[in-house]
Image (cartoon, rainbow, N blue to C red; front, side, top):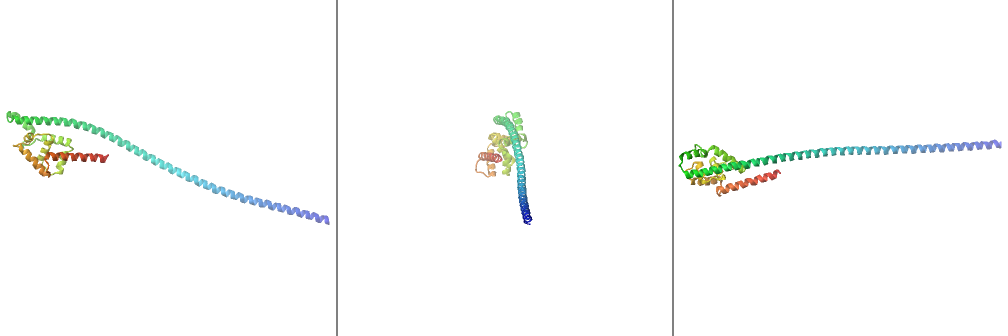
Length: 251
């Protein structure tokens, strides 16, 4: 009896130990599962954060690339515009150089013609009507049928004065509309260096002093107390100043 009871106690103790061990194993496995679940969850969160950061970096990289491409296009466009402006400026400079050379040659030629006309006018005055044929033919070149400057001489003189003095006749006619074509002829001849005698012959005046009267009337129309010569010089300087200002503004 005693032996059977003792064996039963031993068996019960073994069973209890097994149950305890089993419980511990289950507990440990449960803890391991919880730990594994926590690790997996944390890994997923970290992985998601990493993916989000990578996505943000990729987006930022794309944005930087787009900005860089736009900046490159803008820079290329500006470079092309600068190159185009440089070529246009060079072409304009070449045209202006050729134009200046042509204007200088034209001025020299026309100035030489006016010197010849002035010399012939002086010679005609000295000759008076002795040789009559020369006087008759010569006056045809400087006077029209209306006893004033011929159209061809007036056209040449207009072109010359407007070329040399920045469209003087055109601008002064616009600024002072009361001036007649005859007034403009007097102004043009004065700028071309014609003498009082030359003006008298070209305009068909009977008296040399009438040229001075005409100049005074022109000054009165303009509204200046200065002599016509002084006023015209001041007006030309004003045109030059305006032209220089416009060039600087453009640059």
